[in-house]
Image 1 (cartoon, one colour):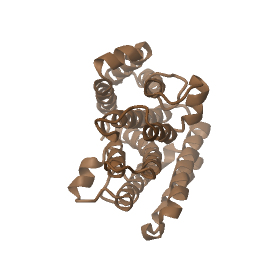
Image 2 (cartoon, rainbow, N blue to C red):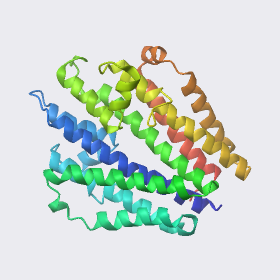
Image 3 (cartoon, rainbow, N blue to C red):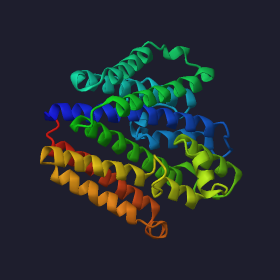
Length: 314
């Protein structure tokens, strides 16, 4: 497979996953902001949403105000924000069009129709009452594309590049959400067990569709350490860091076996997966959760960069 095609498949899948993740982040920001407090919590909620998406610096550089309407427009429709839902869907579609013959009809139709319908939306017509419906639609369309990929794509190099892109993006998103919760979302003197805090943990889990799964697994109230463990180390949780690394490693192994190359990215992926399988929450907490997540984000990014080098992405 040509490096250009590999790159297009990787980024197509990654940006489709990003569109869903941004929709989830907007939803959680909206839910949390419904419980503002007198210490500026409302503004901090939207700041944390932007930080989780990696968009805070760009938003502040544009002079935007930390208000629901401005943040939501920036994350949904802003053409200059490369991580907005609009930009993500457009970039995914452009990459898919570049490798149209490598996709199944179901994949292309799911992605192309999503972009066509979203690009026809008038942002001025999306008021607070329509926001939830639009975000649910984005998530459903992303799931439709993913289902088409899993159900119809040949398990060749193209499939594994798509898997690598999907889970690299998902891991990045989960790590950022968890890091922001501990370091940005709460005021410095906030207690971890208050009513507002419990609501925040609930919405964080909702942003990764994990409230029911958490309660089933732990059969307990929301506890910060258990939420951290669930989102980082549980292999049963499909958006956990462990789960994502467990999917990236075999994708890289398959690519290495099929191509006879990819040694650098394969080694990095195997090492990260092994470390996540061996990781212990107490050890992580003693060393610092922020430090652990920062290291994970750096290693996850290094895998993507190594794959780009190994497989000659343009």
